[in-house]
Image (cartoon, rainbow, N blue to C red; front, side, top):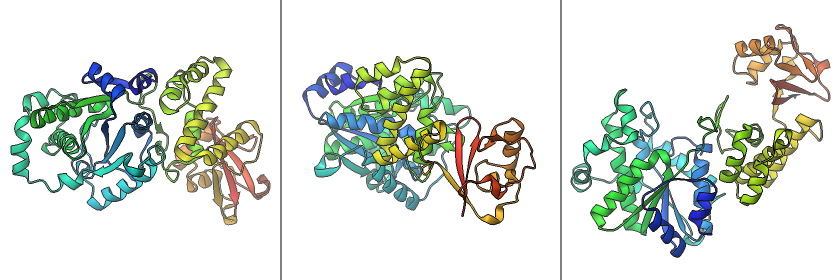
Length: 405
């Protein structure tokens, strides 16, 4: 089975520029391809996960990935899928974020001996002469055609800056630069990048008189079309300091039943026969599939040891089996004893505010150990703790271990 067949079977493929040619190319040759990542934060998030899985599948089939860090394009901002202009970032922040990306990508991609490349488009974009760029690149772009692109159409009513309007030209130039530097002949990306990918392939055809190819993969969404990876605390980050391995594990453990099979196919390397078997489980048995998904995905991002810790903590919290050592832990000092539980919850960020704490109690969603808290003025005392530890449950599935130190 070719890598294209694998990507299709697992549900990655959304659009291709030349399907028959790409199928033959990937089956018979070893190509260089690229996916771009704009370092707008100091960690990748779950939205980047699919791109890394695609790169890993491609590399396993013998193709060479180029991970393009958008040090230059991040200074402009991609309007695709955005309702507002991206905030401006310093070059120092961008370089720092790019370094953090590299470490996370190395869990998926083998960069040894030139098997994959990591490049930064700041190396060529920041040195461009604007007049020369307009004459060499801008002359090949039709404004009328650009305005039909989905990434621009959805922004026209609200306002599209000229700064962002340049983004398509810059991304197209990236493809051309990589084609010239390392014979990169294919760009891949999420389906919101289709217009930009087409622009790059067309630019290579015009400038180099040869074919270049594009492929988009599905965006990670729930069965009802919502973007996956949004939590109460914000984005689901791949950095353990921003989203703990336990919280990461719990996110996948608690996804909707309808999304389990798709996520097993897209976000793990499990054989598809096993994916389909797990995805077909019904009622309470679907929890077996969810536990498998949560463990496999956490193992990919955080490693075997952290996945096992997260699994053990979840089992300890939900079934009472095992130690709570790996559960999410919040530490307080003894002088906080005698304070209202609402104040302590807000101080330790177990709730985002005192008003959230009040709502939680009023709705019957706060438990200390096995006891429900019903009094808004409830005071935390030492006798509630066992071995200086107290289990707090917020809602049905959110646990914290409160420790006195």
